[in-house]
Length: 164
Image 1 (cartoon, rainbow, N blue to C red):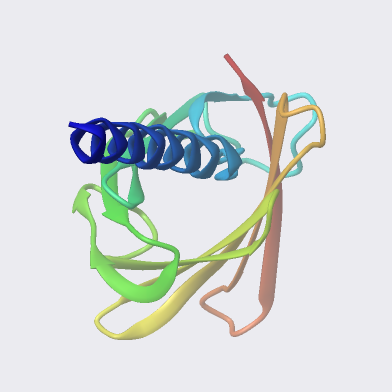
Image 2: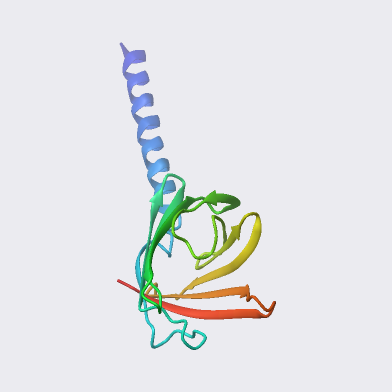
């Protein structure tokens, strides 16, 4: 009888220990500072003359071990775009669905807790390198896009998004 009680107590102690350990692991995982819905702040952003969009929003949410991003924008000429992709921060190419102006695949990496980088490609050629830096308070995402224009000159835009 005592062996049975001892086994039950040992099982209970192990079970409680596992629950505490697993809960601690879940709470210790860093949150993704890019998760949420973001809207462009045109007054704080820097675009080449005549290229600022009329509007732009994007949403980032958890998707398995990675994330899913969905972008909606209206360009300066009134053209609407809706596109997105699902990825991990592993640098591997992921197909883009919809009307993405940057290309047909995106590869994402995490630089640090508040910085991520997306490399966009079209037909295997890099078109845009995009760096997201989320402010320490989590309210602003500053996105720097670098690319090359038709004349072969480097082009850079800085877009500031506010968390909604």
